[in-house]
Amino acid sequence: MSISDETIEKIRRTNCQTDNTFFQAVEEVLVSLKPILESDPIYERHAIVERLTTPDREFKFKVVWMDDNQKIMVNNGYRVQFNNALGPYKGGLRFHPSVNSGILKFLGFEQIFKNSLTGLPIGGAKGGSDFDPKGKSDFEVMKFCSAYMTELHKHIGPRIDVPAGDIGVGAREIGYLFGEYKKITSSYEGVLTGKPFMFGGSLMRPEATGYGCVYFTDEMLKYAGKDGFEGRICAVSGAGNVAIHTIEKLYKLGAKPVTCSDSGGTIYDPRGIDLDTLKDIKLKKRESLIKYLDTHSEAIYTPVEEYPEGGHEVWQIPCECAFPCATQNELTEIDAKTLVENGCISVSEGANMPSTPEAIEVFKENDILFAPAKAANAGGVAVSEFEMSQNAGMEKWTYEKVESMLETTMRQICKRVHLTAQEYGVAGNYVDGANIAGFKRVADAMIAEGI
Ligand code: NDP
Image (cartoon, rainbow, N blue to C red; front, side, top):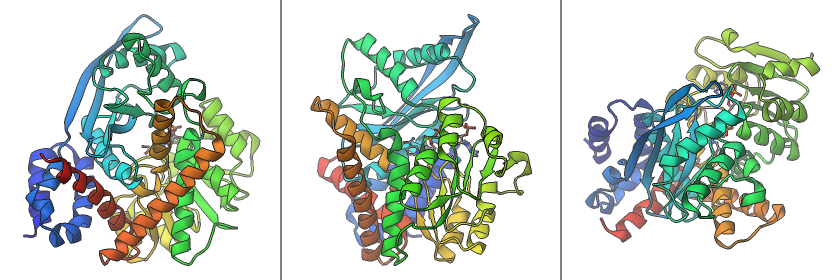
């Protein structure tokens, strides 16, 4: 048994009994790390893998709040502080009914590598709640956020742990959370990122993940000798923050994104997704995507119930570049085979772990350029770190400055991943390249800091 087989088995026994998503993430990373773990015994001597797969600490707490009908509601709140070898814990908060400690552990683990890849001084964490902001009034969301912060504030701070947004947590929620933190601590400090611009947010944060994913892909295409996006048909899933800004940047670089989706169904608009309509429906009115048909009768809407069995409608649409930007495990083996048959050349993960392991295997077998989430969607956390820097220096950077830093960061990440893959004998494999490059920086810091 090789070192990583033994370790994987031990981690499964001790740390993943009820956490399948977490185990999936750990296993993928450890398999990638074999070349570095086997070539350098220092990591085994310092038990880096065991230490890295065990969170520094996990909090679970009760969140009690009152809805608009004076009914008392109870939710679970969580924060997983995974690793702070490189800097303060950093990672988003997710409010969604599916949230549990296993999902947050998986996301927190991935975050360590993602944050490391940016080259910036940030550790890895994740948090959230099973609270569902959908269908709640603004007032209810505010009351929930206040109650959640009543507990969370004990564990965070600008040099300790700096949460941000994720699914279900946008500028509105961050604003309420920040307001409550300020009230409890009497301190005006950069303890959260993704804040509205008027009280310390960075310009470009909403755009950062989607734009960053497109920059990364642009660079990856160049390395593969398949220059640029001009005229390329792209398929994007999701209709939230990441998907919308992926679509926006694709248009800016000359591509034609033709799909988007939400939890109810998929829109295929062969003339290209109308971005203004999409923003109006999903960002402004928070409605279902089916509303797109009200103004675009030529588009096709496929409800979830009519998706192919075991697959997702978005990936049935022929495209050259695919961008899964909705949620985890939304691109299956069946979808991957369809993408390959339809001539897709690249898949870039805007969402966290949207492709199943079987789908990734299909991409590998067919030499599809595959940009894993921890590298491709690191733009959001990079701009979050820029927000921390601005807050610490009481500064406000221009849109142009932030965008240029984002672009440089994403192209550098791509280069780092590309070169690392070459160095470890897996050229073109961006999964292994990202895992090894992300691991190396954190592991070396952990060794230097002692136990
Ligand atoms: P949002 O909440 O803004 O949007 C998520 C979108 O995905 C919504 O349109 C939602 O539909 C849709 N969706 C959810 N489940 C499904 C499904 N099963 N099939 C199709 N669509 C679905 O989240 P974000 O855009 O911020 O995040 C998307 C992903 O990107 C997540 O995995 C997140 O962790 C990741 N990510 C986000 C970052 C950020 O900066 N925001 C940074 C890095 C990663 P509906 O509108 O019906 O709810």
